[in-house]
Image (cartoon, rainbow, N blue to C red; front, top):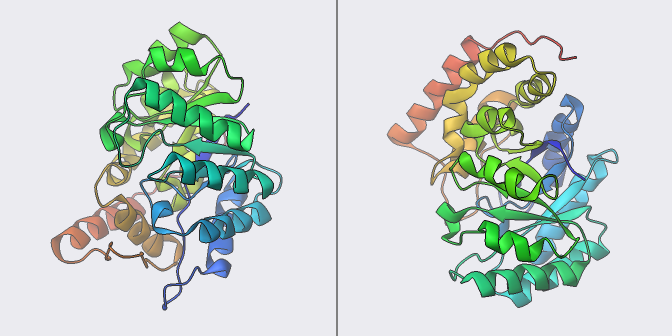
Length: 298
């Protein structure tokens, strides 16, 4: 159902902490112009959980307004299944193309609870669902056995594979064939996952470097691996910034330096400072100084 580059876009805020709709529209439109294949809003490791349900729906509406018919997925990530199901239902009524669902945001569900939560959320919206599998961040492992149970429900169509174990990509494909669309959710494993057959990339640094991200994906699809690898090697220091406790601050600082947006975050997060900030700024300056010329993929 889905494939390609799906940016996990960031929320933008005004100086007084409200959503900045015009700036989100501008930044999201840059992604579409670069040729991404859809958008994912309100990321669970991003600032989605810091937004009210009304605010998350507002972000969804902004993305829908610029997506040009491309799919826009709503991330569902709340502490309780009840709240997840409520938001999923509202997202469906608002016209979301699908959902990306976290099994459990706070409590570490057992396999039975994981299946029950995901199934309840899917039923509440009756939309296609991408399962967010991230045992490192959420300590809930969506195993092959769990996926077997979920595969009985046709609403589960994709998996965002973020276990940090590249073997999982092949294991899912070997076990299920093409039953699930497998996306890589780890920026600095994207080349490896795409080489092993992942059909898409839920990307982070794409928000500042959409052309390079799209170029890597398209070159991989065209089997022009050497050209893709050259860009990926240049990109790696930036991609590593997505795998961090401070990924939101990292990404927003990169965005500010590259596309001229702001780096405002919602508390309890605060913008980077000191040595952490200097490290990110150095990586970005070096990347911009050596930014590659992009060839067109077939």
